[in-house]
Length: 171
Ligand code: DQA
Image (cartoon, rainbow, N blue to C red; front, top):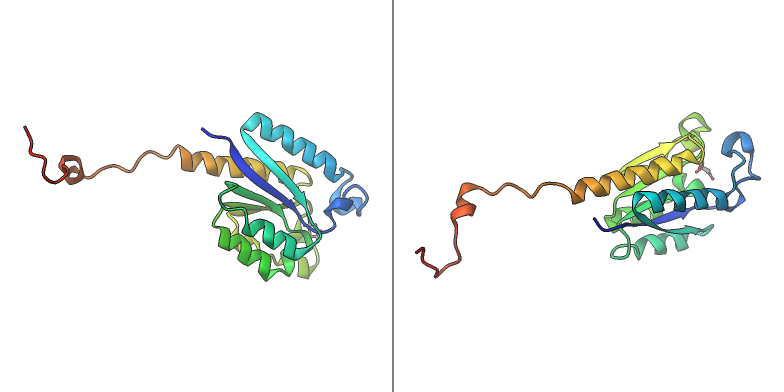
């Protein structure tokens, strides 16, 4: 099976991981998360392109161009999770399978963080496991891809099986 091409997007302020409040986001920095994700990808059959952006429009454009170049999206939209209709519409528009991840458990945080505008257009959301959320998200995308690519061909109806091209007679 071909390697799965995945676009990983880290949203605003995630470049500060390691120095952001550690009780919420841990002490691991973004470079380490990326290195470990690349390692996982190498052993599990994926090619990752990893981008961090603080700009909503740039994230929208990246997602908008992803179809054709990627087979899936792994994203932590960070604060835009709770505000961005534009990112939500971009994810929906690509039609690519997407998994949303968060380091912190957003369901256990302030009320404004408990709502995700983007999760509903993703295949699922993984939240609260620190850097492991990214690894679980990558694994979920790979499993979705494998399920699609190893699905048995649809069974043919008896009529379809005996049908022949027009004009050809049976010997
Ligand atoms: C976050 C949660 C968001 O609410 C917050 O704005 C972030 C990080 C997380 O990974 O836990 O920047 O997405």
